[in-house]
Image (cartoon, rainbow, N blue to C red):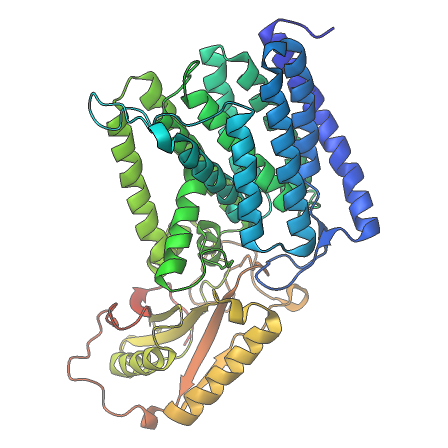
Length: 538
C-alpha cells in the first residue's frame, strides 16, 4: 500500500526510482555492448570510444514508476496519464530509431508534432495564455493555443537534444531544472506534478552515475542518446506547460523559460547563427556554449559545473521573481536582456575565449591548449606584418585568432620582442576528423609557403610518458621548466607555429606600433591581440 503522506511518498518514490534507474541502465549497457547498440566515434562527435546510448531507459523506467503511482493516487485523471504514457513511449521509440538509423529531421518533426497533439488532446495540457507580458494585460492565445503548444513542445524536445554534446551536460541541466520544478510543485501543493518531477529527477541521478566524469570514471559509460534527450525534452514541455496554466497554475509562463533557460538560449543562438551563415539549422556544429568553454581551456568536468551553475542561477532568478511578486513583463524583459548578452558572447567566441584564458591565468589555472609556450622572436613591425599576411590568407571563412604576445627578455638592452601564434578553431563539419584536420593543415602550409613565403609548423602532439614539464601551477622565470598543462584530446583547437624569412615580409605600414594589431571585424573574424606574458627564455 503506497503512503498517502506527500513527503513520505516523494521520498519513497525518489529512492525507488534512483535505484531502479541505475540497475536498469547497468543492465542495458551490457545488452547494448553485446548487440552493438552504441555510439561510434567520428563526424562531429567528440568521444573516442564506443559508448552505448541507452541512458534513456533509466528515464523511461522512472517515468513508469511515476505513472503507476499517478494511476493509483489520481484515478480521476486516467486519460491524462494514458496520454502521457503514450506520448512518452512514441517519443522514446523515435529517439531510439534516430540513434540507430539517423532519421531525417522532417520525420522527427512530424512525429514530435503528433506527440504534442496527444499531449493537448488526451492530456489536456495546452498553452492557453502567455501571462501578463504587458502591464495589466493577459495575452490570451485563443485559436492559436493548440498550434503554439505544438510549436513550444517541439522546441523543448529539440532544445535538450541539441545541447546534449558532452558527458554529463544534458543530464546535469535536466536535474537542475527538475529539482526547481519539484520545488514549484511542492510549494503549490501540486502532488501529481511533484510525483512526476521527483521521479524524473531521481531517474536522471541514476543516469548521471554512469554518465558524469569523476575520479573513478574517466569517461562516460553510457550516453543519454536521442531516446533519452527527446524523452526528457517532451516531459519538460509537459511539466512546464501544465504548471503554468489554469486551473491549477503554480507559476507564470515567463517563469517556465527561466527554469529552462540554458537549453533554450543555446539552441536559439546556435540556430540563428546557422541561418545567418545560410546553413541548415539542424546540422550539428561546434558553436554551442560548451564547445566555447572547452576551447577556452576548461576541462569537461569544469565545463559541466560552470554551465549547470549558470543554469541554476537563472532558475533561482526566475523563482525569486515569481515568489517576490515581480511583474511578469519585467521578468520577460530581464530574460531578454540576459539572452542578448548570451547571444553576443556566443556569436563572438574568440573574445569570450580570450577573456576566459585571462581568468585562467588570474586563478592560477592552465588552459588546455597552451600556456607559457611562446613562438618566435620578432620586432613589433615584423609581427604586425606577419599578422596581416596570415589574417589575409586565412580569410573570413576561417574561425581563427592570431595572437601577438610580448616577450620579456633577460637582456635589458634587447628591446621588445614578440611571439606570434595562430589559433584555428575547427568548427566546420568539413574538418571534423583527425585525418581531415591534418589535410587542412597540410593545405594551409602549402598555400602559405607558395603565396606568402611563410612556413607554418603545427605543434607536435604531447606524450605524457616523455613530458618533462613541471607539476606546479606557477610559471617560473629564468628556468627551463614548462608550466603544467591539462591537455584535453576532445578539443578541436589547433595551435600553429608561424615561421618566416624576414626578407619576404616587405615593408610594414607606416602606422605600425607596439600596440594591439587588429583586423577590421567587418573584413574578417580573425582578431589579433597584444598581450604581456610571463618571462620566458629567449
